[in-house]
Length: 414
Image 1 (cartoon, rainbow, N blue to C red):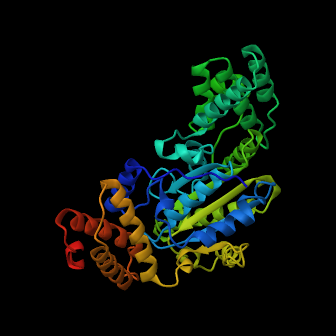
Image 2 (cartoon, rainbow, N blue to C red):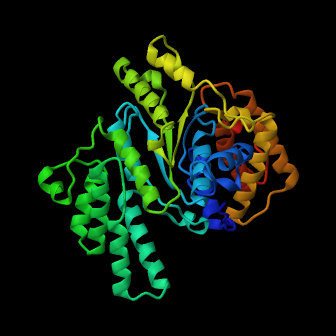
Image 3 (spheres, rainbow, N blue to C red):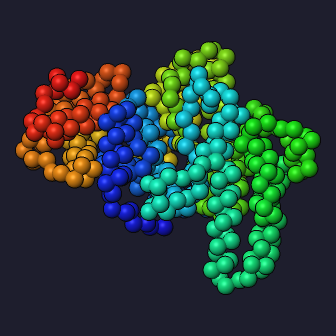
């Protein structure tokens, strides 16, 4: 197991957290662990049963995360991402939007977004400073790190370049021959300082089109489309392991309810999901773990064979005692909702205090948090996630307590 010590919360990161949580209620990309509550047991089970050994040793797995809008799905996925980075996995977070650029019924667009968002493992100390995404940035990072490692061993520049050339040429990537050729070609263009050629190859790797005249000279002979997308995802996973990363973790975050799709697209969506689940049970998906987050399970209601097949595959529930279960029910992490919200509130208040270099009066702070938590728990069966309502209202309340030195009523914060 790789352990990394998290850096002390800086004022800058604290301000970012408060701004993000208070404005949209969405979790920030960095700093989640400073206010996470209740996920520890689930995350520990994922780490001990999958991330630390099973996926590392060539296994594959699929989990479906279920939580209301504003109920913590993205927060959970970001927490898994950080955990995977701690174990040297490459990670791709993808926001699926049926009406946008990445609908799940179009697997070629899903692949394109995965390739455009993939990131190498980042040290904990570097995560709050921003990072580049995409397969091109990952290949640059790999080349630079490998070059520096050889230099640190005391090798000459010529010997370092020779070693790197050998490393690139020996990369064995399957099942797509074109994908393997593209990875090696991209790295060799980096090696030879051919920036334009590197961008040309990365264009294909990013799923941005195929032109035989342009890509053929790099031994790329295959299109990336709906028929080849799953093969390309498989090849991307193999690439991460060939480059020396532990594996690939793919985080798919469904931003819309599936029933809003047309009948044709909905059927294709479900067919793709079934195929992805089945792929995760095959050795060809070695070293890949997929998390698919949805707001509810209503899309599984139907009478066709596709529906029935999916229901069977998604019937088991993930728990700390049954980590092989497929469905991760986020509400299952909470026993007392008010107590849960109060714990989150205390942590966010501490972050706020760091951001603005001040202290809250304890009695008034407890009164504020308790009141907002009780209100949020009361409305938690509404369409909007009560967790999101709580954190947005809390940040507003903290500002009033800070600036005006009084506890606002819940009515003021609605």
